[in-house]
Amino acid sequence: MNPIDLRQIAIEAMKTRDLRPAFAPEALREAEAARTKAPERSGDIRDLRHLLWFSIDNDDTRDLDQLSFAQEHPDGGTRLLVAIADVDALVKPDRAIDEHAGANTTSVYTAAGVFPMLPELLSNDLTSLHESQERLAVVVDMRVAPDGAVAQADVYRATVFNHAKLAYDAVSAWLDGQAPPLPKLAQVPGLEEQLRLHDALASRLRQLRSDRGALNLKSSAARPVFKDGELVDLQPDEKNRAKDLIADLMIAANGATARYLVEKGFPSLRRLLQAPRRWDRIVALAASHGVALPAEADALALDGFLQLRRKADPEGFADLSLSVVKMLGAGEYSAGAAGVKSQGHFGLAVADYAHSTAPNRRYPDLITQRLLKAAIAGDAPPYDAEALAAIASHSTTQENNANKVERQVLKAAGAWLLHDRIGESFDAIVTGAAPKGTFVRIHRPMLEGRVVRGFEGLDVGDVLRVRLVAVDALQSFIDFERVT
Image (cartoon, rainbow, N blue to C red; front, side, top):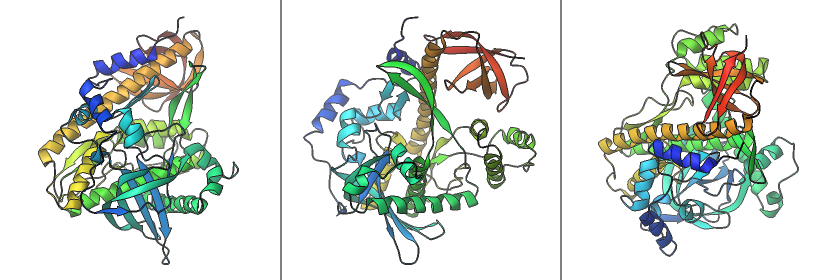
C-alpha cells in the first residue's frame, strides 16, 4: 500500500467543514508588516520583567500563550500572577488576520501537522512569550487563600520576560522524583523554589474545586509517532503532574477574568458545560460497579464515584473516564450579558468561566482579551451582547468542526497503520452510540472506528472485543465487527 498524503487529507477535510487551511495573501502581508511595527503601548503598562516568569508546555511548542509567577505571603496565602500574551497588540479587529482568525476560531491540530489560527510569524514568534524575550502581556494577578480560594484578583497590562521555557514531561518526571534535577534549575536561581511553590499551589486550587464537585478524570489522546518522516504508531498522550499544574493555574485565571468583566459591568464570552444530558446512562454505569448515584445530576456524587473507581481499578480508570467524558457531552461558548453570572462549568465546578489564556490559538480568548483591555482602560466594551452571541455560536460550531477534522485525519493515519491487520481482534470500548452509527476505541494503536456488525444493544461505556474487517485511509474509515 502506498503511503498516504495526510496533509492533503487534512486540507480537504478542513475545506469540507468550512475551515480555511491557508491564509489569504493580505493576512500574510499584515503579518510581515508586523516585523517592523512596534506593538501598541498606550495606557498604563507596568514593568514586571524582573519577576521570575517561566513557562511549561510541550517540548516542541512554539506558540507560548502564558507565563506564571508565584509569591508566598506570611498568612499562608499565595500571590499568583498569570501573564497572557498580548496578541491584540498586533492583531487588530476587522483586519485580514483577524478575519481569518474569526472564521476558523481555533488552531487545528492534526496528525498531519498544525494549521494555526494566526500566521506563524505571529503565533510562533512575535506574539509568543518566548524564552529570553521581552513581551507585552495581560496579567491576571490573584491572591489565593490558604484553602485554595481565589480571594481577590486584578487584571492589568505589563511588560514581562520569560526566564525559562520548561517542558511538561521533564518537569513532571522531576516533581515525581523519577528524574534528576532539570538543567534550568542550576542556570536560573530561584526556579526550583518557583516550581515547588507552583506545584503546592496547584494542589490547593485543585482540592478546593474537587471539594465543590470538580471531576477528576484521567484522559488521554492519541499522539502520532513518526520515524524518519514516516508514521509508525499512535500512542497515548496522557495527562501528568505538570500538565495538571498548568491546567489548575489556567482554570483559576480564566475564572478570575470572567469575574473581573462581571465586576466592570461588561458583557463577556463564557465557556459552559451543562449538566449531562445522559445522566441516566452515568447512573447506570455507576450502578454496574455497585454505586448508587442520585436521579438528578450531581457533580459531587459523580466525583465520589470516580475517586472510588480510581482506587479500585487504576488500570481501567482511563476507559471509565472516557465513558464518562462521552456521556458528559461537549462544552460550548455562550454570551453573557453585562453584569450577569453564568450557569458555569459542570465538569470544573466553577461559575463565570471564560476562556482567556490562549489568544494565539483560540479566537474567544482574543475577544476576551480585547474586552479585558477595554475594561482596564475604562473604555466602552468593544463588542455588545448581540455580537458576542454570534461569535459564541460560530466558535462552538468551528470548534466542533475542528475536532471532526482532527478525528478524520487521525482515522486516516490509523487506517494506514492497520491496513495489513485485517482479521485481527482488539479490546475496545464503546465511545458513541447513535442512529448514525456505533463507534469504539481500541488501545494500540489508539484510535476509533465504527462497528458495522453486531452493534445491536451496545451503548457508551460498554467493553467488548472487536475484529477489524475493513479500512480505507483515503476515506478515513475503520470498520469492526463485534466478536461474540
